[in-house]
Amino acid sequence: MKPSMIDTDTLSYFLRHHPDIVEKFQQYLKKYDKINLSIISYYEMLGGLKHKDAYRQLDKFQVFMKDSTVLLPVTDYSCQIASEIYAMLRKQGKPLDNMDILIASIAIENELVLVTHNRKHFGRIKNLEIEDWSI
Image (cartoon, rainbow, N blue to C red; front, side, top):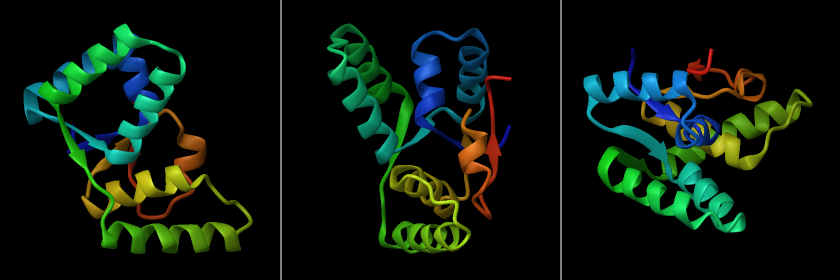
């Protein structure tokens, strides 16, 4: 298991107690102590939980964030990487959502594997290593 950053979809599976994902999180935390999460995924999770008025889940999420994660920011360098990804995908006629591009750029900048179930989108990004813990 390599150093990784968790995408929003995988984090959502974890918070819903998907057995395979929970097991992978436990294995990862034994080896690395903390889960890496982008500020973008943090925003997406907060927004989604607040939109659903899921305050009990929001409380659990906040505890998880405090105890088990490292929050990775958007930096000048990740913006440079993101702009390259954006331009390349637009030229190919295969644009992606800006949030996904920023998540990918943060993983690339920090030399982390992106753990996601969304292989269709993230698989288009050159120099991004992805892994799916749900299979």
